[in-house]
Image (cartoon, rainbow, N blue to C red; front, side, top):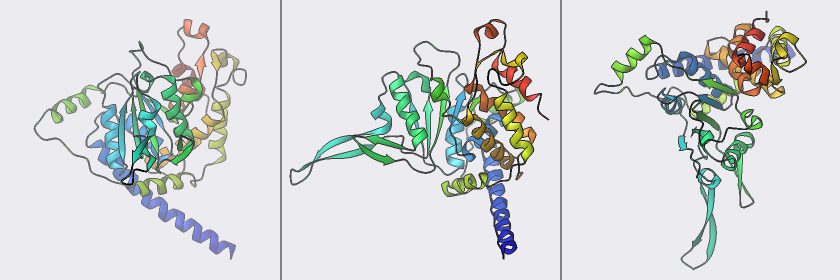
Length: 333
């Protein structure tokens, strides 16, 4: 009887996986029709959402970060909204507020007016330009999936994801995110300049009379089904050990002293959880049903980069977090 149940479960999982692979492949293909030359960025953004997390996109202006978020919302069938963060933005501008209304019988009552955070995909543009008070209101909602206004709890839609952007160059008048709040993001996605061939395609295809319009390849329910599948995908002991090895060796005093001497503080257990989920999601995006060491190596930097810092001496010597993580990943396998 147990064997029949196991067989039934395995076949159901296989069917679910097959459908998920088709949907994810269609979504990736659809995104590629309007986003050129950013294959890694598209992959990492998709992995973030399929893993059920939030992403921080870091890049200079003009690299299609906003376009990417809009495209993801359309392709994944999500209700997407955008908020431009500014120093005068208040928490109520994001969460919503209560207003006093008077009815036909002159009776007065408060009514909650929902803010833009009540979306399935929220783009927080230039999140570091808002005050710490506004940042913390958003980041609390990201962690708890509800907001509290005037003592009343209001649940956020499901799925709920935040893709925040940040300009790495212009820091005047900004409020850098504290380390504890950066940890709420599953991955930091660095958006770099496209290569010459991709920029040529951008130049030709985006300055003509006709603009390519992307179509939905999934629905919100499809995405949530895929997210549940990600948590059911098998992970081998070798992969689990690799995740533990790289996360633990990123902490001062726990790994190779030649490397950890450069690290001021390192990632906590949430980083290991993020790397586990992200590696499963990347396997699915790549058409596979189980993660490999290649997934761990590819995702180590975006998962760990914003969760660790170098010592002053290491920075003075020209060390970077990227180079430290590269040395850690080189020891895997």
